[in-house]
Image 1 (cartoon, rainbow, N blue to C red):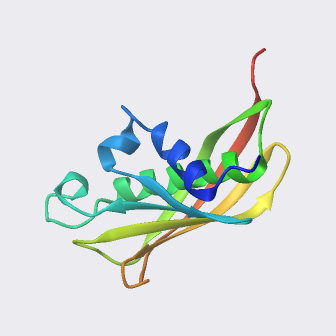
Image 2 (cartoon, rainbow, N blue to C red):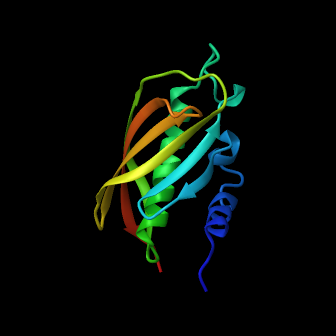
Length: 141
């Protein structure tokens, strides 16, 4: 029996209860064979003091989406994923609406993975460009 895309997204979003992802209202909204998309509302919860999106919140969205991408696209059963390095270049400010993180593989290794994560706004303007390295570690049995 194949699980629907909606059910997979629901399961992904259900595991974020009582976490930073719930606090920032980050949710996974789409995925395909080679990408995962997360989104986060831009509001006072994620503002810098001057009323624009905080870069740290942007990076949290990027790492969350990239980590979900590693979990979803690698079909891991005996391994779990951790982010080990992230960098971000913020190129535009945003004050309202949503920001979307689209994570795609640059390198899909057995142990380490490298993702490019583009953060865009509702009008598809580039807000930030992030790079995330993850590592797959064996689960303890």
